Structures are given as structure tokens and as C-alpha cells.
Length: 366
Image (cartoon, rainbow, N blue to C red; front, side, top):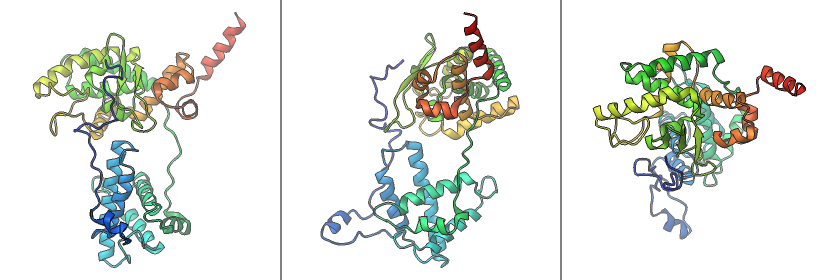
């Protein structure tokens, strides 16, 4: 297992993960501006300014978030060009967009349909639109206050995220998950997709690892004898995040051992023996991990098989709840969770009233 000193992940992205920093579509701009001229914009000024915004964020946000935001700017660019060509907005440049132009864009996005589901875009999608739009309009290169004025004038367009936090997995459901996972681990003939699905769910709920941390785990990071795992890529890797070693709780012991054995056979079958990841992908060049959508499909396999409702954020909270039940305080819990004590105590888990009561009563008997 790596001790965190051999490879400083995040200080220099690998060839596989190197993100493309948007370039200036007019490379002569720098010299032109030095001579006192105004910046020349590309044919599509929306993406010109989007690239400027993304360049400032290039290594200050998570890679997954970076690509998601850049793709979102591209989708919005299509909307802006369409509305401009249909003469529904007066300009394509965020520099000079008026309140009514911005309102029209927000209105159009609200009316669009997700091609996969056939339903209108949900709150999460619209909220992410507004996040990137606000970043662009408030960027010093743009400094157009009309976006905030539009939401103030038309508050119905402002999307407010649901502040409700997800709970841990229900105690009975978690027992069902572990029981079924042990049965899957003991079955040598079980489908590998089923084994991987249960391994992912049990690993998440017994290490507290986030999705990005799970996807970037490597086989060499797992110490089966010590039941520990080194998280090499963490949330906020290039900013506030720190690599850490976390325990694998005993609930996961059987399926961890079974999965690692079966994984080698699966990799040999698909010619992926050189792939170092714990969740290797057979797609693309066969050198990287699976993508988050594949992990979601694995979760859905478990949900369908057990008939329970959960996601990987609930698994993380379940891990912290187990720590609390073991008597681990939030100061120690924050070390393995990679969160501040305040966040853990507010959102992640709570001491069970019966356990607290029994602990207090036991002190009277001492």
C-alpha cells in the first residue's frame, strides 16, 4: 500500500487525466491589448468568455467538476446561438446582455426536455446552469450585473437547492446489504457485475469514501491484512483536500477478499492485467477506471436486488454512523472522513439516544 509519499497525486495530472485548459481563440489578443486595443472576441463570444472563466478555474476545482462546468457552458452556448438566430435575444455576448435577454435564456432552459428521460430539466440541472452563468456574468472580464438583477426582478426563475441532507442507510436495510453481500462473496459462480456492485456498496459504507475517491482507488492501495485503504485522490485534491488512510470495517472483510481474487481473473479475461485500478474499465484505452455512470448502474443493481433505497452519499453517512456507534468521537472521525468536525456533527450522523442513555446510566454503576 502506498504511504502517500511515493506519488503525489494531484500535483501533476497524469496523461490519462490531464484536463485541457481552454485557449484564447485569438492568441494575438495579449499583444493587441498591450497596445491599448480592446480584446477581440471569437465568432461566438459566449464561449470566448466561458473559456476565460474556465482558465481561471483550471486547477482550483475537481477535475470532474471542471469538465462538467465546461460542458455546461457549451450547452448554454447552443441555446444562446439558437435564441439569437431566432431573434429572441439581442446579443450573444454576455458583456452586453440585458435583463430580458437573460430571462429568455432561463425561460428556454426551463422549458427544455431531457432527451434521456423525456421530462423537463430538474432543479439540479437548472441550478448548475445558474452557477456557471453567475460565474461568467460576475467575472471581472465581463462584470455584467444584469444576471443578478434578472433573478431579483424575476425571483421565480431563481433555483434554490433542497437543503435537506441525506440520512445514513436504514439500520435494517444495512443489515440486509451486508448479509446479501456475504452471500454474493461466497458464491463462486455469481456474475462479476453483481459482485462488483455489492463490493462498491459495501466498500463505500465501510470506508466512508466518496465517489471520486472510490473511482480512483488502485489495487495496490488496499492492504487486506491490515484492512486499510489509501485514498490517493480525494475531494479538493488541489486545494483543501488531503490524501488519507482509512480503515475498512469488518463488515466488508469477506467481499473485499472475494472481489480481489475474482478481479484478477476478470482482468485477464479482458486483457486488462496492466490496469491498476480497483474498478478498471474495459472501455477507451483500457488503462483507466470506470466512470461515475457505471458506478451508478452498479448501485442500481443492488437497489433492484435488495429492494432498498440508497445512494453512495448515504453509504458515506452510514460509515460515520458506525464510527459513532463504536464510540469514536467526531474529532477522530474527522481524520478518516476528510471533513471538519462541524460538518460531521451537523450533517453526517447522530448518536443514538438509547446508546447515550445506557452510557450515562453505566457511569452511575461505576
